[in-house]
Amino acid sequence: MKIVLKAAALAALALPLVSCATITRGTNDVFVVETDPIGAKVVTTNGFTCDATPCSFKMPRKSEFQVTITKAGYKTWTGNVTNKVSGGGGAAMAGNVLVGGIIGAAVDGSNGAMLDLVPNPLVVKLEKEE
Picture: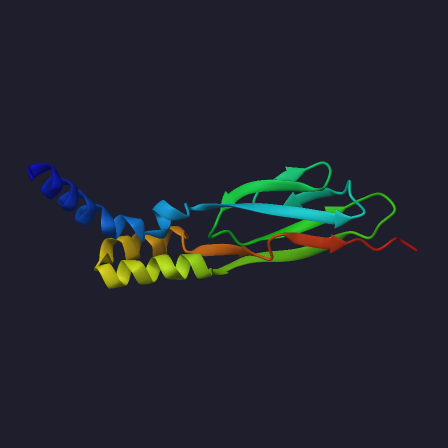
């Protein structure tokens, strides 16, 4: 009987953590860049680069940055990546509020765990130079 009570107490203590976006989603996201044609160089303003697409980067979910894509014979492409509250992040935040996890809600709100990078994947069709 004591084992059952201990298990129930542990489950009750762990319940608020289950809905915490920081634990269920993490603070990083995999950002993917695809181009047509493949093989373009990617440089971001937050310090990430790759020499040939397709490529991916592990980045903080709360990042906002510019992406510049270059390839010989094609026009340079530059665009912005931002973030927004995702469905999964919003659900985890709602779980924090419902279960009374004010600390979890504050942590999720400050570290970006409830966000997703957008657009992701970034898909760019490069235009030929004239």
